[in-house]
Length: 185
Image (cartoon, rainbow, N blue to C red; front, side, top):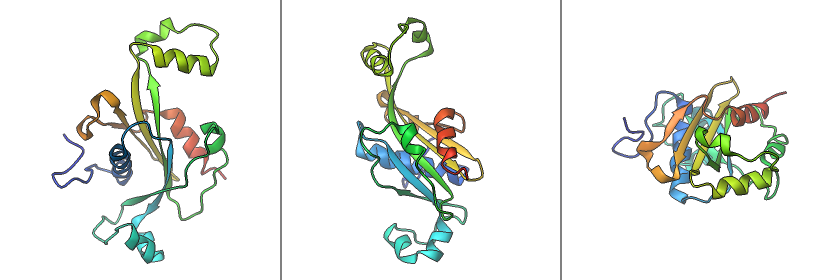
């Protein structure tokens, strides 16, 4: 079943899945080789009530479901800062229901794990993976809510189509854990 209705917006059962697919679709429109991007997820109805001007600028018309989430892109992530260190500096205001992050990475199939040379630094490993003939480029969009709900969308560069996006709550558990930690008190 496709992730998009004939008119274009993502179809999904949960508001979090819809938000993840909306972000994936937005980033896909920008093309590949994008920097990591961070989004706050806010309750759409609450945003329309508390910030009507912002809701209008974001195109929220009131037609959204009562349980919908609106992704709001945050400032660009600092260049050269390790992602895990940067995420450790984030604290969200109470109005933010969740957050999402989109990153592009290289990955190898499980069959290639046995051929990884021992003793490589992180930089050396990244170079080794980038040269591996079985590598695949993947865009990961991972979102978490304050209540612990999680969702992810994965898009392979070689299958760059909205109908080929894989979704699931546990696809990128380490990144989901890091995002969830941004809500820890």
